[in-house]
Length: 520
Ligand code: HEM
Image (cartoon, rainbow, N blue to C red):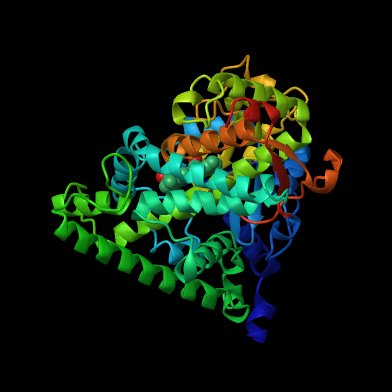
């Protein structure tokens, strides 16, 4: 080899390799012209931008967007992640390019807990999801179905009010509103889904704990999803074991529920559960079994799909609903002027009736404005449920490759000074003169997301939220325990997928004089 090299012209030795390299570089550059990617904050090897997210990713991402713009490309470990932080970019993703962004990323914890994507919320975009979604929209959460559970909501709210009366008014003790909202929303969903509650005795305690653990795990961060060679971490820190335990216990529990419904339906001739329910006496498990029997779904609906759909109702519908009530009451306690105005409206419309029913709600415009304002400042899932792009696409002149994780920062959009006057102020009046709504058409207010994968549970959630809030301010006056000042109310948020209060919301209820006068 040495000998050969001695006789070669230097051009052959040095020039050829250089020429080859230059040709390769030219070809590579001409095949892959530089793409115009969205701005990115600097990242670290392996971690990407994960280290920057902190405890409150919606806040950190909002600050980063102020520096880098409303469309950023970050990296969560090895995965590119697009972050949209303005109404305009959210519209591009959830409306203009809705189909391309209608997939959900596969995340291992939710995948395991929600039957490997056989539910609606984590199912990949495709025929199976389409069928399950249409069952949700047309059968489980339609206006008619939600209406059929009106009696359930009104009865549960009446029991909830009785508890407050017993505890706070009679004994002048503070009530833990957060805790009470959790059991109220769980009781309502349990009755709607299963035809009975699981809130008392050993069964109730176990179910409550199981549901709490399910919600915690769904909000847990799994490092292995983003840095695959760290997948082993969850085997060591106990997350894998917890996921497996919750999955198995919930699965057994749901098996029992489905079997019991099948038995009862056989006895009652397929007319649904005999337990007290909505007007048509069918709970959601009955509805799903009926679809299975009639073979009406268009795809084979096996029992796993039934269990996955029911679990979705709990996973997507409990934490989100109670969170709104908790933040709304916190802000009402901090703003006596708003509380008074709301009480005047509700008490005026009820005309000294003992309680508020759903008939009263339609004309309560200020109540609706208070709830919208709560959604604006505290969207329960601040970064919405992640999406994933299925094709390369161009947004605002930037190239977004297929397979990009996509987050919409609804929290940042709700506080964007370009869209909202004095955005940090809790001022429901802003909605009295505006037609902006949260149903997914106005991208400045998107707590329920939008487009094909937008939340199908809006009517269900709003029916509960409006009824509970109206009753709370109708019957009681509210104060912080021990005469604490309004500024003392700790508004710290917890971490996780759904953002609720970190510190329990304690408040004292008293019965206003006008209720005594009206002879209640
Ligand atoms: C205040 C209450 C609620 C909020 C803030 C909320 C929010 C959301 C959000 C942000 C999404 C993702 C939307 C998107 O990707 O564009 C979603 C999806 C979903 N929500 Fe809700 N939700 C609430 C209540 C409910 C209720 C009560 C139910 C059912 C009982 C429900 C069932 C679902 C389901 C099944 C999905 C998945 C839809 C799909 O992927 O096709 N949600 N929700």
